[in-house]
Length: 421
Image 1 (cartoon, rainbow, N blue to C red):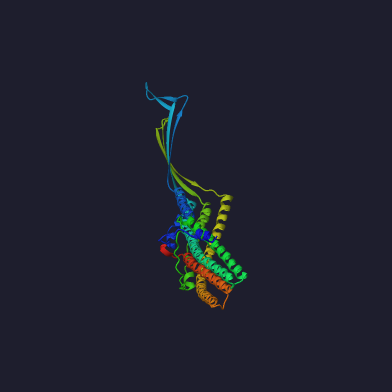
Image 2: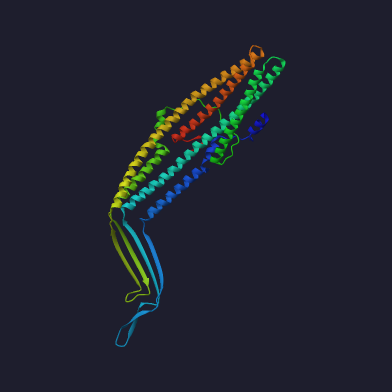
């Protein structure tokens, strides 16, 4: 059983370790990041779609008609001469070219402003999605790194527990121990085996999540001991809240909604269009084959539906302002929480390291007492268990602190390791 667990826990290791920056650089390949880029492209095309309605348009229409009878008249042109005029030819061909030019369209102009703001908001949303992916990558990375360290630590604990069991059995045969000591040592081996299995599950789960996010197969993490350096004061971090991606996105979305509201109310104003049409046909009748016409038209419509739409747009604009305030508050709260996570994490790492040192001294003392015949095997088992628990706590504290520093920089919109944004 022990050999099988140790064999399953072994992962292929390479000489080249994988730092966090390697995964962060590849975060743009995630499905969420790719989807946000495509949505931004869609918003850019929609802006051109709205803008195109305010630009001149050219329409050409050609047609052919077969008439059962040809209709014409004879027009006298002199005392003995006549001219044949065709009104409806048997084979009729028509070509019409129309140029439309919007001159005044206040609602259309406002819709263009709204589409432009929506496009800019979608571009910022790409950055927001990227930050979410970076946060997920960092979380999975440190979970994977911590789980890998926990696997190695639990493997050592399992070997120590097995050696302790062998020692107790030998002492039992020599008459220096009782069956209770053997049962306790066997229980400790089973506990260590379960810990190894749990650690392997955590490592494999985190590795799969990391690979799904970055398309990089995790092999060997790089997680140096967490730095105990304190971050700069909290107010300096909270001052960055208004420049964060989430606030910028909410600002642009509110601007787009304001423009939509303005466009809805301007829908009650008149529009002015100019048009010019050139028609070429062989059914000339008494006129020339090519004719030209130009004109200006004014359109003005006021109805209950337009007013209701405008009122709904105004309400949506007010909602967007509230969402902007909420985004700013959330940004400050996230920075506040992340900053405290770092500072509390520093205290936890210090405490875990002190605890580990004390546990290691206690284990050495218990083993020395056992060797001198002044202690018992149970005291050694308890000391080794405390040392392992302290080591596990320290591993998790280091990983939590490292992730908290990354989360703080993401929350404040600051660059990450390796130049990742």
